[in-house]
Image (tube, rainbow, N blue to C red; front, side, top):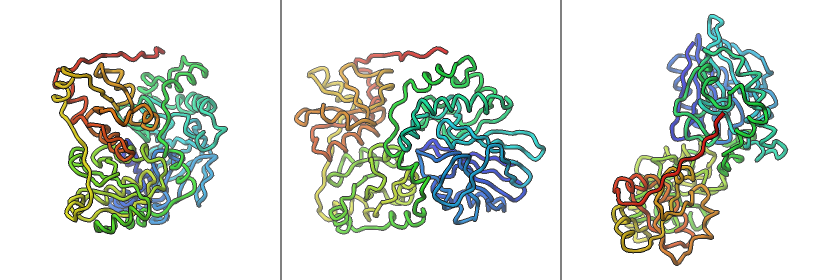
Length: 472
């Protein structure tokens, strides 16, 4: 039996490739499916099944394109109701792939259709479990996402289902099983995920707070719901795309990678009310950009921040990119359902400036310069890191305004006051500044290098705060 985890760091996502005796299966594929097809071709294997653990919220799955290109059968667990052809498996049903077996274990809780797949090798030995968002390494799936699609599925109800699934379906399984989750650290689908992406079930029983056998159902629900922050706005829209279907990735890529001259780009922006996303490095963006463009750098958690900052996945988008990166950008947009990219600026920002079109820029300062200012005057500092990061350590004078909730903070920012904005390393702060710039806030100055540079200067008054932990 061959089991391979195909991990995509920018989304903290794990798909799985399973192969035996010339037959293969893919579990929870990303939107672009050619890599999975190529992997199967390398083994001279036919993709027989596409198994989905649930209707995903944080990405659009590639199951439909895989079915179209390979004739594979899409499999969901019990209660799933997709709007396209799929096999809805029964709890306990077994599928054959070459000489190995995949057993369906219905584990509702993260969502009602959530399913774990038990892998059984050629000798009949149980090898591992592909758990989707039911069980992570160090955590379990959040139970508050489905209610954004179906109101009566409250987080308390789903948390109770998850408790039962873990106790009755997962924990009785053998300790030597390998746990293969759908996500790792950095995903918004949980709150305490490990950087490790596999583990044994036995070790998880010892270390994962959610598998503590001493927890009553009510205690489990309380612990699970404690500390959850609102999910990104694109999550419910991705769920619906995964339920109802979507355009082929090939069509989306062809549209998004159209080259537009500066004049055509400008016309498209004016005629379609498209949002301009400049994907260059933050400091390059600061030196010059198209007015009203927002900066979300491709060299970061690009798709996640697009999904967090842009509430509607149907929003028309125009792209400014470094040479040779347009396909990567459109791919990463499509992974989270942003299929309406209209094209990119041919020749990049340099072509725009060369034609003499209007440009804008953002003032930046070094951490060293900011420290010097603090000795001589009162300075307004905005820290856009997460609340947990801020509480861990921050500049005493800084106000915490997490980027995730930028719309909640706008009313407290005075357009006539100068603010110095920083994050951890300069990526999020430029997103923050560029978005507010597009809304008429012209007195925001970006701190290059963020908190990492601030600490290196050793000239700031910092405060530490130890977050309380829940003892189980």
